Image (cartoon, rainbow, N blue to C red; front, side, top):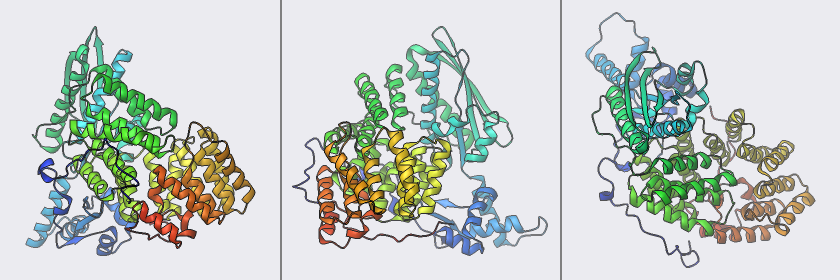
Length: 592
């Protein structure tokens, strides 16, 4: 990367990644020891057991096969120990009678120990408001978010916490506990009620075992709504401590969210997070407004600064504004969040994405993503955005592992499901990509991103007719997205309809949407399909100058295969920092 051509904004600030900044509790990824009897992939585990990979994966879910997951240089890879697997096999196949020899006893003990420590998964259900006041609902939302965050910081390897958005679809289900257990592998639910009398609130909570419906723990809390935020954080910390003692036998103190924001500003923060997940221009602009409102009232609230950084990053990512217009502000917000809370996974994730997309500082971005994951292994967005960096490097298996870990944390997030499809698309696993898109559209048939990326995959699979229909749906649902129109032009060009492709491109250039950026990257792809390679390189150069945030896919995007051998294209690859790999992958069949 040419530093003179792309200088860092004057507001940039170095964040030290030295060991002293992160104490020993954040174990360096490189320090994990690899035991000698380790099986390092699903394939190795399946071969050891003499079964297919899919069968072994089902055994993990249904029969308790001891599988471990670690996040080291091969992010998110599964592994198992031969001794534990053999002991598990003995435990399910050996008759109950008959003595065990000393070696078998030792192996059985190891397997039993692993099963005793198997990860608990908690779902915090929406609290029932006995009275239904709007102030009560805001309080309930706030305390639930605080509880989820506090639980997520206890011991992520042994206690999983389902995200609030993943639980919401089960809110009205008459058998929600059973369904949560079946669909999301939930082992325990936390349910509660709230009741307001004058300015005081009573909160009753209970921890229930999904398996046998037994209430394992319950408690009542009271407090004044005049100090609602302080009450939320206090209750969340106490609940997390009690659940930790119950489920983990852990008496380590719980680190709750910082008790600095007042109730009104916290409500604005929740609204910002709500609008952030919709990923359309209007919602992202609303998210910016609510995060800025929170920061105005409570400037020391780190999560609000990180949320603002994310909203600005996404406005740029989806080409609603130029990166140069918002990314310096995103950087300032991310750095402020880190200053206020150096252990915030949200802040490290935001800063990593700025380093990745705007600065093209691949090494520091990789470090920051890994720090984010170590700070909170339960933060789904950290894995999702790290998958993009791994994808850009051509590390498709690692990218797949990362995005699937994000899905495991938040299995009903539409954005994450679609991004699992995008990750498969760039690995040229088109059947897998289509499966993810269909899953998203089953949940929300109007979700724009699912239609748009499904259209791109259909195009690569050769189904141009269906691709064009999906692009039309995307354009309609998005209100005329410039990006989707450029993608549709590419489909026309692939189909040989040069006139239709050029008409769309000329309309985009001659009559630009004042509310959106010109989609330089996608216009370049159209000219590649039209075999006008000089114009394609020119538009890619423009995208490079604009720091278009789609450029991270340039080395993997199948639309640019025809120009990969050109010297000008290779120069562009070097210019944007993708020279560590120009390897692409051939299309492969769906995974088993």
